[in-house]
Image (cartoon, rainbow, N blue to C red):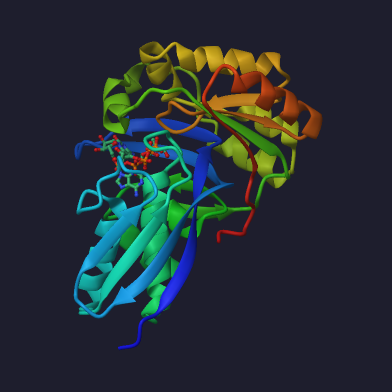
Amino acid sequence: MKEARLMVKAPAKINLTLDVLARRPDGYHEIEMVMTTIDLADRLTITTLAEDRIVLDCTVSYLPLDERNHVYQAARLIKEQFGIKQGVHIHIDKQIPIAAGLAGGSSDAAATIRGLNRLWNLGMDMEKMASLGSRIGSDVSFCVYGGTALARGRGERIEKLPSPPPCWVILAKPPIGVSTAEVYGALKVEELTDGCRSEQMIKAIAEQNFSGICRTLGNHLESVTLAMHPQVQQIKERMLRFGADGVLMSGSGPTVFALTDRESRMNRIYNGLRGFCKEVYAVRILGENNG
Ligand SMILES: C[C@@](CO)(OP(=O)(O)O)[C@H](O)COP(=O)(O)OP(=O)(O)OC[C@H]1O[C@@H](n2ccc(N)nc2=O)[C@H](O)[C@@H]1O
Ligand SMILES: Nc1ncnc2c1ncn2[C@@H]1O[C@H](COP(=O)(O)OP(=O)(O)O)[C@@H](O)[C@H]1O
């Protein structure tokens, strides 16, 4: 078979809400969250190989390139599902911080599934790709769709939403690693007192009400990660001091993001965080364009 090559974008996500509803017997949590993709993305270059192998390489040296990598798992799953004997080489240009609450690994897996679907003409629709992706991780289904969506169940049940109004997203990641399993494990679901915000967020998005969106930001996992890492609170305070309209930790953290619809404030927040934190980004919400 002839060699074929494709480039796919794998954008990061942020959580506008994350409500934990209950602990499940299978070790996961029943959640409701509104997520949206942002213009900070890894880039995958997928090339078919004549030999039946999966070969990865990556621009950063500290990611495993074997079956521990979500990209490898996605390629293996597709090959098994469709009985494909051709191999694949996947180059990962890593731009999304790792273990940051931005779903970089999940988005890479989703991009691999979307890319191989096209490259090998597999004819899967979004639903089928999302369902396969959920076997790799709870966030992969959302990443298959991208854009803005409500995710329920353990994160794999997706309902598409309209995009929020255009705004800036300033992200700061402190130099600490956070384990998603550890953060969920430390949460005392029965002690949660603040209500579920996802419904209010959906309404604010439908009304294109930017200040309503900022007021409704909320993440039940934030207090857990905050208690482990006080830097997260310091970043939140600093972002607010420099003029953020809303601030929140994304996912299980530790990345914190600020929202603003004014470019002058974006510049102030970005510059105000740069001396404080090594990894700072200013990007936009992606809307429907998911690379
Ligand atoms: C917190 C969130 C929010 O978007 O994202 P990140 O912080 O990872 O970006 C997600 O729920 C993370 O999704 P993902 O990273 O795909 O998680 P998985 O690999 O499926 O699960 C890792 C571990 O997290 C816990 N987990 C995950 C999802 C869920 N609904 N309940 C859980 O309790 C489980 O202990 C599980 O073993
Ligand atoms: N392609 C990948 N990119 C990033 N992380 C990956 C990838 N494959 C496997 N991982 C592993 O997944 C874990 C979670 O990483 P990531 O998806 O970046 O963060 P998060 O779950 O916080 O959004 C890390 O410990 C990392 O080693």
